Length: 367
Image 1 (tube, rainbow, N blue to C red):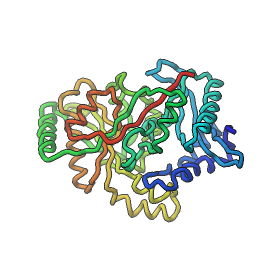
Image 2: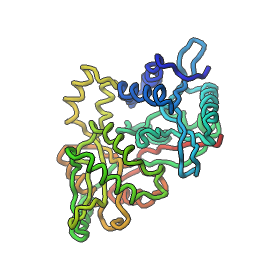
Image 3: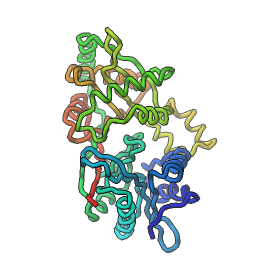
Image 4: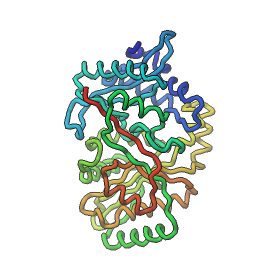
């Protein structure tokens, strides 16, 4: 049986992930308190999302999905159905029942496509279904799921819309030296400098970052540019994960105008896995004593306005990040995810020593 969850079943919705991945050492739960608060707001207060579960005869959850409807520029529609927080047992009959229920809800709400995994409320968080790279532990805000998911989607009739690519940094000394030289030349010839994000003036910094994103966005980006308000909401919800050493803005020397931005974040998944997604006393101690010992870093966003593209600005941002990586004793660096059609960004990643490590697939289906 498939139905919308009740408010008193939010914890059951959340707990299903823990049950499904009980023996998976790479599993990282959502922060339970944050997810509970988000589901209450989106599903039961604003009522813009639906949380559905498939229940067996004993009342046990076998699958879950979160749904909403919104615009999508790739599919050229204002009525795209998005799914996220999808988890399911390895049983196609359960998959079919849950997806039939999801599509029925989306049709009732005017959708003409179903697409995911993609969380519109927070579009860079756990986006896509993992289809390659299962042996590696996921980095912060990236997806992890069993290998059988792809087969279930394809058996049901889903098609690939696009892949998002993640890379592991493998730069040798020769590459590092080239990046350094290019970065120093770019700063000099373009008359720019690199600033760390000023957390004391976050509203001003968000304004500058949004300006860069609006100017730099192209059709190869998966989603439309977030509004300034949406960006501010995401930045503030991520605030605990932002380290100014890795949140960098490139500016012109002459007028301090923002022309490029890059955001990387320490891999807090290392801690969240140990915390089991709980910010109780044990979890708080793990967070407080472990955050300075994180060994991984994930590069999440990079935007350069067109006027300064192909002029070494990205290398200048990479080099500043590399210096912070060395200072903070980071041993693993993940780059991406980058949409597969974004040849410029994928080429830039390869040029600094990035090797493809994980692939996340956005599936879609006409309904």
